[in-house]
Amino acid sequence: MQTTLCLDFGNTRLKCAVFQGKQFLEERVLDNAHAETVEPLIKEFRPAFSILSSVINHPPELEELLRTQTRFHKLDHNSKLPVTTPVGKPETIGADRLAIVSAAVDLFPGQHNLAIGLGTCITYNFVNNAHEFLGGSISPGMHMRFRAMHEQTALLPLIKAEHNFPLVGYDTKTNLLSGVILGMAKEIDGIIDAYALKYNNFNVLLTGGDMGFFVPHLKNKIFADPYLIYKGLYAISASNHF
Image (cartoon, rainbow, N blue to C red; front, side):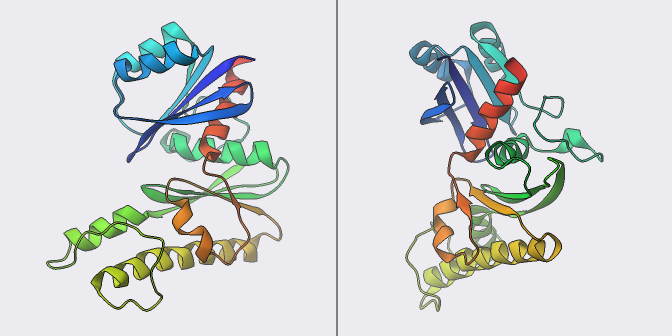
């Protein structure tokens, strides 16, 4: 089976995953987007294919490396996708959102899917049972909310997310944890409920680096997969390479 390297460059983290055939092997976190950082991965895994989803200004040398060493595809609005995109401005849709909805229809074809990505921002991405990506919404992510309260006030500290905290905070730190994490959980549940009023039956998929902080607090049934974006990238790579 041939190996595929799937690179996901987000605003917060640079990551990649290795697939052998359709099987996910492992994830690697990268220090930077330079070609010399990715080149050892190519030597180690010798991928036949590669795909890049990037929402940052990465060095052009990286694409040249991938293009010369693999059959390379850069994900954008011109890619062959398993979904159709909104007619407004498809070129403005984030590559990460395209990957998430592509994974959703690959896992649950012919069904309504709400795919939620928890990263720098929360993205809500709805694709209907005709595989039409209708759009969704974007709101600030967890770390962005922590930073905003610290940077826009004189006294609130910048804290790190934790799993254990009370509903009723007893000091500044626990007040911030309760407000951000439980507040976001209620937002996510509220958005899901709003979609439920419009669509009778749909799957809810949750992914992203911050996923683990919210799953215990959600009342709605969800399909949680930390590697969803990689699986979408692999599906897109296969569509564009075969």
